[in-house]
Amino acid sequence: MVSLPVIVGFGGINSAGRGSFHHAYRRTLLDVLPSEVAEETLVDLAVMMNQAKFENDQLVDLSGVPISSVKGHPVLHNHILDHTLIRRIESQYFDPGAVPFQRKMQVNPGEDQPLEFVVRAKQLPAVAPQGWAYQSLEGGKVKVTVSQGFDMLLPDSKVAAVSSAGQLPTGFDPKDLYPSRNHPRGLQMSIYAASDALGSIGIDWQTIADSVAPDQVAVYASSSMGQLDDCGTGGLYKAPHIGKRITSKQLPLGFAEMPADFINAYVLGNVGATGGHIGACATFLYNLRAAVADIQSGKRRVVLVGTSEATINPEAMEGYAAMGALATDAELLELDKALGLSTPDYRRACRPFGENCGFTMGESSQFIVLFDDKLALELGAPIHGAVPDVFVHADGYKKSIAGPGIGNYLTVAKAAGVARTMIGEEALRHRTFMHAHGTSTPQNRVTESHIFNEIAKTFGIENWPVAAIKCYIGHSLGSSSADQILSTLGVWKYGFIPGISTTEKIADDVHASHLRFEQDAIDVGKQGIDASFLNSKGFGGNNATALVLAPHVVEKMLDKRHGSAQMSQHQSKLEQTSEQAEHYNQAAIRGEVRPKYQFGESVAEDQDLDIDSTRIKINGYQKTVNVESDNIYADIC
Image (cartoon, rainbow, N blue to C red):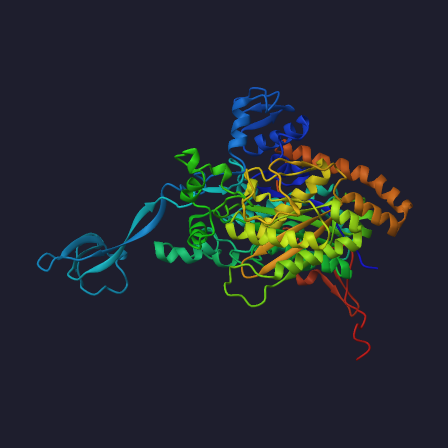
C-alpha cells in the first residue's frame, strides 16, 4: 500500500503577506472575498507592517487611536494596498534612481607635472604600482608622486533599468523577529516561513516528533540562487573589490541548501533526512518530488518542503536585466505609450500571456508540511490537499541553455494522465485548472500556452482555466511554485481562482483555443475544482509539473482506504487541532507570534547516543532509529 502525501500545514511570506491561513492568497482577492475575511487579512497586514497594534484587544494606530475597520480607515487602507504586491523598489532594498557602482577612470599625469598626494602609510598598496614613488613624512604619512598613468575606481551611481519588484510588505523585516546574527535575508525568511507552516498545523512540533522515529522526518529546502546579499555569497565576492574584508560567515551561509540546514539546526532539531534540490525556477517542485517519493516509499512520514529566495538586490537584478529577461522601465513605458505615461505603471509590470516585455523579480519563502495519510488521521491533522506525484523532465539537445524545449510537454502530459487515472476523465476535463509558470516574457506566453493548449486538446479539455499569480507577486525564482501551491490551497478554501488582473488583453500569439484566461477572479465554488496542476519552466531545461488534489477528493480517498470509523475519529481530533491552529492565527494577527529559533539548546553530543546492533536511541527523542533493514536484493545476494 503506497502512502499518500497529505498537506497538513503551510505558511511563509511573500509580497502579498503571510502564507498561513491563506492570508497571502486573500490579499490577491480582497475585492471578491466576504468583507469580514478581507478585513481580517487587512488587520494582519496592518500589524505585520508595523502600522497598527493591539492594545487591550483593540486595534489602534501608532498614536493609540482605535481603529474600528482598516478598510474604513482610508490612510491605513491605502498604505497597505500601496506597499504590498508588485511596486516600485523601496529604499530598504536600494534606490533604483541611484544604484551605487564603481566607475573606472584612467588618470594620466603630465610629463612635467607628476601627480602628488599624501596618504597614511597603512593605506598604501602592498605592492607599489609602476611609476609611484614614496617619501615618508611625519605622523605616519607618506607623500606619493605618480609619474605614469594608472586606472582607478571611483564611487558613482546610475539609474537602474528596472525599478519594480514584488517586495515583502513594507515595514515587515524578518530579522527583527529573532536573533538573526547577520544571517542572509533568505535564511531569515526561511526561519519565519518554516515556523509559520508549523504553527498552521495546530499540533505542537514535539507531539509530531514523538509520534514517529527520528529518521522518519525529512526537510527538503533550498534556494535556486543561494544567498546573494552582503551577508552571504554576494558579500563574499564583492568585499575584496570594495575595500572590505570577507567575514567567516559569508561563505558557509551562502550555500543554496542552507534553508534546510537552518531549519534542521534551529527549528526542528531534525536528525532525519535532509537535502536541498536545485532546479532553477522549478526548485520547489524538485524538493517536493523528493518529499513525495519519500512518503510514498514509507521511508519518511513527516516532510517539511520549501524554498526561500531573496534576490531583490542591484547585482542580481542587473544580471537578469542584462539577459533581457526583466521588464525594464523603458519597455513598460513603450507598452503603455498610448496612455502617455511619464513613469511606468509599476503595479502592472508583470503581464502574463498579454503584451509583455519581461518578468518582474519577487522574493518569497514558503513551506508546506506533508504527512503520510495514516499519520494525518492518527494525529487529527488538517487535510488541505494531497500531492500524488511530481514530474520532472529535461529538454534534450538545446541550442540555447535559457530557451524552452520539449520537456515541459512531457511533464504536463504525465500529470494530466495521472489526474485522469485518479479522478476520472470527466473531472479532468471540467474540474481542474492550471497554475501556469506565467513569467510575463514574450517567449513564455507563446511556448507555455502552446503546451497547455496541446495537452488540453489531447485530453479533451475544452476550456481549461489558467491562473498566473506572478501578475500579483512577481517571479520568486525557486520559490515560484511554492507561491503557486499556497494560492491553490486558497481556491479550495474560498472558491475563487485568481484572475490575471494585470493583463487586459491576451496577446495575439498566445495559443488559447482550449484555454480560459480571465482578468477577473473565476468563481468555481469551494468544491468546484478537484485538482490543480502546478507548472514550472526553469532555465536550462528544468521542467516540472505537480498534481495537487483537493481536500474533498482526498477525504473520499482516505474514507475508502481507512473506513468511516477512522475518518470519524479523525474528525473528532480535528476539532481540537483546528482550535489550536486558529489560536496561532489570531496570535499572529495580533503580532504576538515569533518564529521558532532554538540556538545552542538541546544540542546532541556523542554521549547522548545509545547504540546497539539493531537500533540507536538518541537522548531527547522518544522513539529509536532502527538500523536493521530487509534485504531488498535478496534475489541476488
